[in-house]
Image (cartoon, rainbow, N blue to C red; front, top):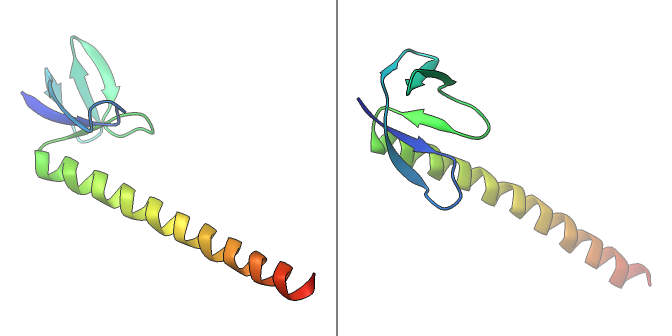
Length: 82
């Protein structure tokens, strides 16, 4: 069965052949692997894999926006007080 794996740096979405899958695990070459982990995630459709990556990137953008706002406030404090 074909599934879509996300999590590699050099390939955003990779097609992988899975022996079988349950709600929480996949089997590849007889080895059990968690379907969702910090390193890899396995998806039934390319659309699901794509949505997962887009959500992660949107979250990353939001975190960076918060860091930028914080840095801008610090710049303002430095310019105001020194």
